[in-house]
Length: 454
Image (cartoon, rainbow, N blue to C red; front, side, top):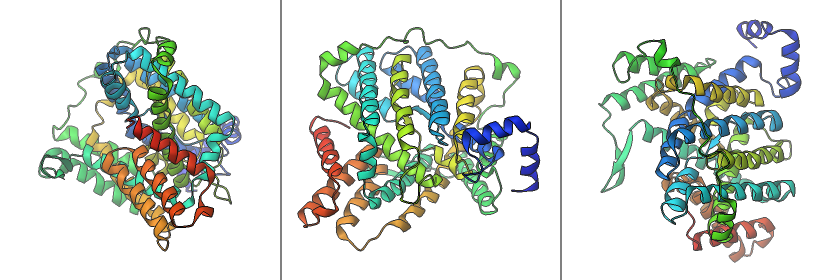
């Protein structure tokens, strides 16, 4: 620990310092208060876009935007703090990207359900999660995933978040002829993102504490100076607000309507997509944070999954979609976040965003995009744990890794990885290498494809 860190640590009252140590086991996980707080701020900044993106998507489904904003923030605060205090994970949670699109465009607009009925389906899926968790089935699913696929999941998530970063930076853009192509790197947005990437990489190489956060703030300030975004004109630009209310969505979910529509078609799809999006992300993040024991099992995973299940039920009750552990937490973990104090910090910042929501506007996506690219690059290191000697491992690993970014879905990459692993092992006489849970999961994915799940 540096002298600066020791000084900052000693500024905390002894009682408070001891309380944080007991609650979060800082010494055991080789971290300190300063590092955890910086990590929490970094995680929050890289995922704070959900505060504005989620209400916009839910509004397309007919949910009042102000209520959707309030529900998004309260759901994020509730489950992130629950994850911090119950599971002691450095993982902030919010309504899942992809899950919200599935809710709005597939279920509500595509299948014609009301948003109240769709929220009922989300709530029931949370109940299913909780049952799977308390019975230990969800944990068995994780234990049944072969190590080679767990490593592939981490690599795939790395590529996925790097792709998100490249897209947010407009370094990669849509192209009708080739699907994607290089953006205009002479324009302000991509240039700012590249500058932020260079700054972050240099600071990381020099092992500067808070490197990613410094890069975000520096890029944001430069973006203001060059006129890419506006400076706040006065304190009123930051502090003036109308306190958002979720009165129009609170407990508006129609559970019986969801049951009446059909358990298998909607609720099963929600459950499959939510289960594996979140499960895959948690596996990747916990491996990155080193939260595994000597046997390779993830520490406190049962508690994390319980927090997720309860959080999803609460989110539906508030008026938002299913929650997910965000891949952007990898930025905070890269800053050294190892305990629930990281998540607690992020949760508090989510709550404060109710008051200071306008401030988030001054953190442009080009400032956070470089961090996603850099973290994606760092997560590629998990590929060292993968053996390429067995071809029945190589194909599932490849499909898992490549299809996450190409389908823009963690769950789809998982589906192809799980199904191909099970089939290849089964058809090449290597049945002994297949855990029984792999059969069930593979069949579940196949059923979801048949039912039109995405």
